[in-house]
Image (cartoon, rainbow, N blue to C red):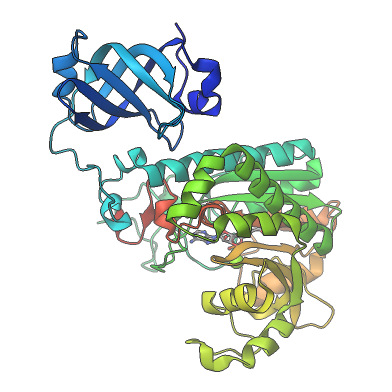
Length: 462
Ligand code: 4AD
Ligand code: MG
């Protein structure tokens, strides 16, 4: 007997019509019309559930009739095509086993629950249509990313999660320590004595794998990391998480234009693979979450992304300054409202902003000849704002060293990073794609908490 997934059955019902099958899953609804039972079964493989039909007289009829929503069952029966029915196929039960009954207090009854409520039951919400679809898209998108870089000959490197550097220089790190928080050892000057900590130096969770990816790019030419990153920024927004995943390619012998071309090509690759492999999920999101989704994604694949310098963008924003909460002036860090205005209202599709003022960007970015800006690029997309941040890296030893001194970075901590410029340093570039923001873009889901399996945000570890 076959054991297809419900997804496989819905992909080609004709192939299964008339066949016996054995299926496992969770009960979504039970409807009892006296002599016949109708059960909606979900196995998590697709947004669709399969209707099971049980006629009075089958051995387990009474047991099935008492099932509550959420129960786990294993069933056998014949798959019967139902042309003209609500579904193309149903399963006529011949036997069933209850693997795990469900208590009537099961919180996911058949009605629409709010995203806020679902966040309070993080361990059960993957069983809903919305979160189920989001996590299937997440899984396919991750696969598409590996596929993209693999096809292009990139080496996948696992950069460390515990580090002693602050890759972004923003000081937003979670400390990793085994010191006693109530009574840490102290130096003569009264500071915490980290020489007596586990690693002998202050350590933290990484905010980005970039610096280590650079070391690998200067050995393997083309590399990428894809892993968790951590930021202790206290921004309680719908787009920031304290733990999120980032994809960071890094390429030696490469300039900013090539970097942007790769970012655009990767974005389009992810969208087209997810649209092809998750058609029912994208349809579901287009119907229930974001009506314009399908059209927008199709449009993005087919059109070139826009390019604009930061300076041009600020000039444009200044003309509409009455529309914004935050002030706009040359040198300001752009806020989400500014980024969204540019990509949604000015351009109407993804846009790269380049050449940002050096004062608002990280220490490692390459200084432009004007002495004011750096070779940075951010890719902004409608609905989300900043999806990608990248740059050409400063490969000139003296310039980098000078910049680090200006910003007060310890030469000792970053001596290995300077070494990369001392020994065969080459022009190189990379970027970081926020994986959750990509999933938000692919699904139209507006809160990052609803595309993270178990979100970690300030004050919340549900
Ligand atoms: O712009 P960011 O800070 O750039 C870097 O970390 C560079 N080291 C990347 C590189 O050049 N290799 O972060 C990159 C992307 C952002 O564009 C955004 O999509 C996402 O990571 N991101 C976040 N996503 C969720 N929650 C947060 N708190 C995020 N902070 C950044
Ligand atoms: Mg950024």
